[in-house]
Image (cartoon, rainbow, N blue to C red; front, side, top):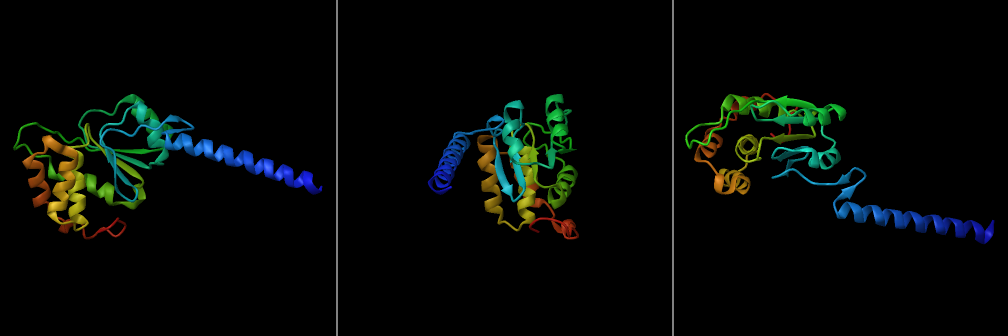
Length: 196
């Protein structure tokens, strides 16, 4: 076999290297086997296996596919769109729907009982990886994540900094008050949870 065997191996290694380079350049450019990767608005990692965002649409499905989600925590009262449901079903992703009304009135609160219910799902590592989302990823999502941060014993100023990073000029005093007054003591019984 001599030189022919080593030449064939070298050629195969060169082709694999070029293929790997091409694949990695597509990923760096934001493209993969399913097309371009476009994260949903306000997307971020919250913790290992926990993500947050605004409402994903069909343009975001390729990106979401890379997260290998098990669950979606949807915080809006409206029914989940059929295209999104179909994506979840085809990927065997479980939908948890917590219909939180959200008002633009400054002293209307997001319901704390719904935040607690959503947190029960978020804290259960058996549901991970999961995505928490509302329409814009600001208020409802910000309250759930802010209360999670309290459970993780973040200092309140850091919790509010993170909330404001996503809410920006739309930050609400009522959301921050809900987070500040949120009682974490009822979550101490959860043994299968993340980071508390």
